[in-house]
Image (cartoon, rainbow, N blue to C red; front, side):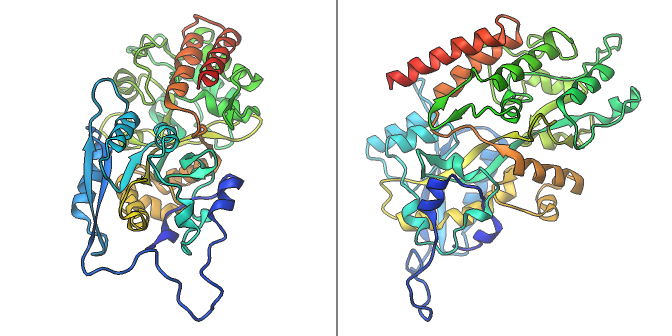
Length: 440
């Protein structure tokens, strides 16, 4: 591997740590450890399936693959895939594999992973990491490697991650003569500030905070109050921590009225996404919303846009400190690859390339290195992000995509819109989830 010490992550689940290490060559101290692949006379040509999407990060990653020769050892051809006929991306990739289409590497996110790993489309990376003396789980941010595991087996390495922080508009704080958020604040302090910043008489109206289905995510509040939410395919959305988290967020909209109703920011049951809606983004940048949660991804690039200049602070704390992270960019080795060793070998330089174009590198970095990659961030912001990465937790990768969105649609939306109490929604969703799991 080339520079694995620049890019990886720690705190792997015990089963995967056991599968991945310790890593060493043979018992001889004089013999140089063998590489996974033997040198060739020219670059090894590899292919990578990835979504045919219009996102800036997809375009940038495709451009990197077209320009980068990876030290003359490899070339990687991007193979964009556009699902058809109502297929998800993971279903489209699985269909290609079933049809005998050969590829070497497969891009995925943590929701596509269960389908691809469960159907044998991707390889167990343990067969490679056990021979790789440069691989170390300690290089990665805590918890992120587990997002690439399926039932305790590593199938993908994270290329980049997003983590939720709180974004706020300091100009609105100054105008209301309200102190800025402290780094050790809690959810009561968040509410107090939101109430102080809320101004129904302003034109346009200023809201103290924005609460949307995943912004800030109820996962963080639930984890902080002791809920595991999903672990070993045991989903418990009726935990007291889940109920209190949902109630707190619904109260911001329905009782305290410091956050706009979902209809105002154009959130509907049929357009639930993991990101802010265009309407919500416009309101934030126009100074109509003082605080909101956001995945540090595209949102950080709003800074310096000529409108609202947003600052970052860690997510408030409950009984514990935790925030939500998401891995939207992972890569695994295709089961049918004829060059599997070379495909694994390219994952390290692929991580290096990804760190230059994607939001948050999946590997540990110091603030100055992070700042050099993201010029829009200050050193203080980098420290906030690094702290948040340490505290971030991830949705169980064994949970299929449909289950995650079933939970969002059945649990979160009715509570935030006042159509159901947190207890009612949790009970109904738990029953629906259990029925789906029993049907598998």
